[in-house]
Length: 90
Image (cartoon, rainbow, N blue to C red):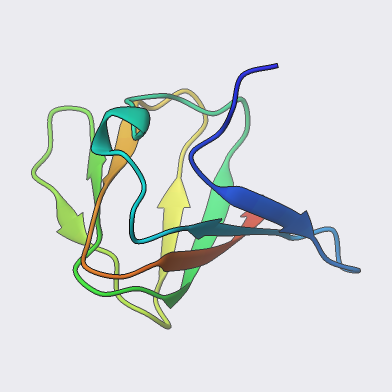
């Protein structure tokens, strides 16, 4: 099984809670796509970004939500702290 660049927990509402540590290796944050539409809420993180295919990076702002469409290539870009996000399938 491939090691992921984050720690994941699933809460009682079946939401994925992911934490990327501040010392994650940037080479582990690869371009990828998901098999379902996702709603991502940023819990905490400083200076992290999300980048979609053929777009400029956008800041990941705590308290804000982002939609990641099924099959769209994207990646996260490392910031200055740990990043905590909540993911729901929509």
